[in-house]
Length: 267
Image 1 (cartoon, one colour):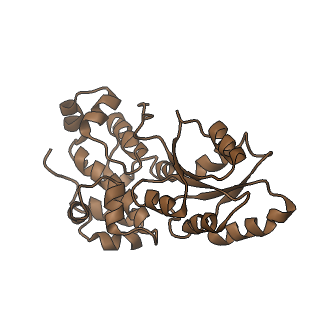
Image 2 (cartoon, helix red, strand yellow; image 1 turned 30 degrees about the vertical axis):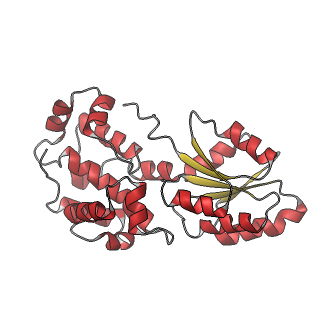
Image 3 (tube, rainbow, N blue to C red; image 1 turned 90 degrees about the horizontal axis):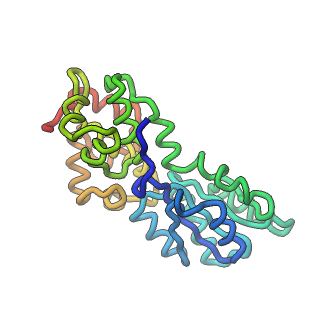
């Protein structure tokens, strides 16, 4: 199995923390060698992060929430692709706050004094990258990717969760030259490598497009397309549709569109 753990594939965790105890919990449960921690100090900062970064999950400190903290919490409804978790002591007086979190679409509550050792296990299965990887763990049969080389390259591409990956990076990950990889990946009947990279990026784009808080410019920025026009051209080339249509299409629909004659490009 190829190694895919590097700085570009670390899951991004956005945290909005007010208290020292919540900060200590995050430091202990989510070490920076395994997570990219992005700290925000206001609801406005949190929203700005979601508009420029592929966020895997968000942690909101609700131990003593003020108005701005609740504004930050409300973004759970705007960006449901990233699960939101509350950190709180869960005292009897915290029950209304916990209920309000559930109403906003929070996934769970991380309880101080109880969940410190399991917080990472609570968050990781729901993270965007984890769900994306599990959903695409095997290449869809319609793509005809059946050789060990094709499956390994697919695994590396999917591990980036829509973030850009070059053929040079892929070649290094699988231990081949770029030319050897490209030539042997696109055997007769299979799509070529660049098209598969674009396919996976656009599947991620379609997931982000389902967020009420994201527009096409945001998605292009998050997934490192050169511009929203570049995203539009790629979407047309790969799926024969416009970016505005991505939100209503399921992954299986996108793969079917891709498999209908859009699998080859110049290498």
